[in-house]
Length: 338
Image (cartoon, rainbow, N blue to C red; front, side, top):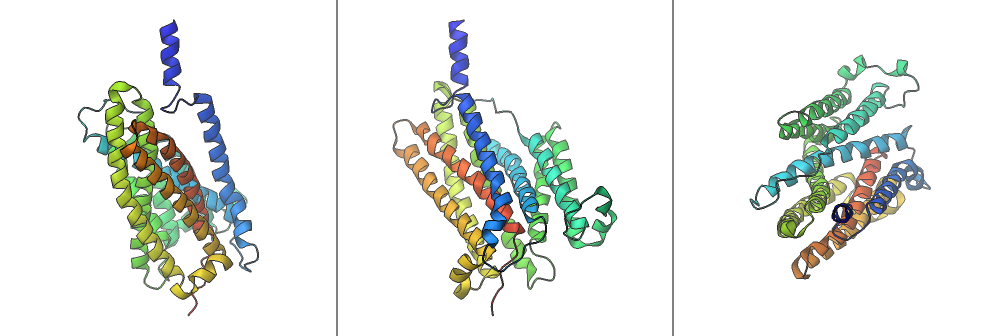
């Protein structure tokens, strides 16, 4: 009995020894904080700018944040599971997949966004306001339907014998989001869509990959698996550095396409888009500091798995970054002064 209780207690604690109840409370607080970003963020970002947001901007921002998170989770699982195959001595056990839950959340979010598109980007007040047939007559409507069907297919793939096939419909969602962010009337939409495609793909692998790495470290907790866990975290850190470089480069380039270089500093404080972008940059800078701290511990500490602590804080801040990204896509675009 004593041995069983002790083993259960160890399983309920992570590498840092934090009780499972405390982690659950912290996760709920983080989710609540992330939900407040799109709900309260629009009024704060728009205050004093003279700009007007589209109706229901808070709800749209929340749905987009959920959609982005629903992309990160399964793509991160596929990415890290492939990295883990490079270590033949690693434990065969894997944490329970969250892909199905992510597919359901993504489907609901995509369905909500499609209903908004069907009413001409207005919030439907009744089911009768939703014009499903009208979605087929517009580019944005067809992209919205593609995302709904892609998440549905991803959920079916996640429950199949070959869950890796869900990568294809999820990739279709990434492409659809890249096209949606740069409509046809925009001047030179193809370069912008390409930048968004690379930015979103790298960001989802970065965020979702770190989340799944930490889940695998918790699953592998124990002396025999510590070496494999440290090696996996180290490999992810090297790949994440490349992903971060790509996210930064494409993000800066995209911002300069939205705002001329000589007006960026002014628009970062006088427009809702600029203020939200500045908040995102500050959060990403904090993530970089945490990543460097984790990398330092991974290389220099006597126990490399002490890097778990800053890495856990890193993934928490990245969750807020995802919420801010959802808000950023819902705010009015800045004026590109000529």
